[in-house]
Amino acid sequence: MLNFELFFLFVWNLKFVMKRLATYSSSLLLLFLLAGCYDMTIQVVKLPGNTPPSDPIYISGNFNNWDPGDPSYILRRNKDSVLEVSLPKGVGEIEYKFTRGDWSTVEKDPCGFEVTNHSAIYGRQKVLKDSVRSWNDLPKPGCPSVILIIDSLPQNTPPNAVIYLASNFNNWDPGSRYWMFSKGPDGKYYIEVPLVKVNEMEFKITRGGWGRVECRSNGEDIDNRVIAGHVDREIRISVEAWKDKYDW
Picture (cartoon, rainbow, N blue to C red):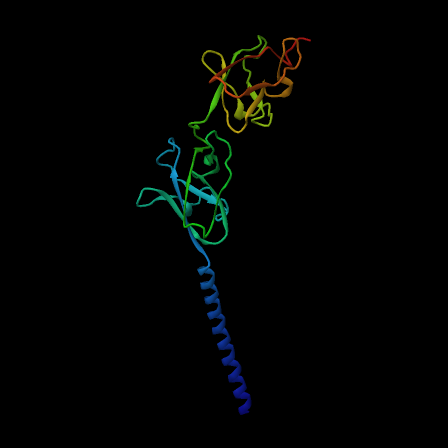
């Protein structure tokens, strides 16, 4: 009977010791993992001049499931008045972009085109400096551009016609709402086109579809219009006829 009691006591103590060892090992593992992680602070040292002063700036990345308005990741001004955010300790590479709270306000390049994700690797540097060049929903300052002006349209152009630009800038989409001409008070149609991203721009004028594209006065197709090299600030265009309005 004594041997059984001693055996039971030994097993109970062994379970207790193993439990304590497991807890101790887990703590050591956690300390080891934390010791292998790095701090990361992201600073934005330059914003577009038209950034609303009252708008918060957020960072969104693979560390917060790309949430564009995560309140935990608002940039705040440090003692030097620099906007910054400290990320959780980590290892490896992160990717991120800046927004003003949702994806409609995400950062863009100087002409409004997509920018590649910013990236950083934990451990390489504690403080990383970045800049934002423009916002998706605000005018794009400092973008090299040219203004296309339609001086004349065919007489049979519908009075309520919406005029579009189809080009290698927009994958030849004949009716993209982002590439609509605006009608000025003088009755002429205008559009401002950025001149970065491509060395040469080719385009045609449409009324929203390839069946309603411009053509020659005899109904024949026209070659693509081309902007290349040094150009004037304004380029004036005359549309001779529409494919669907030509009197065959």
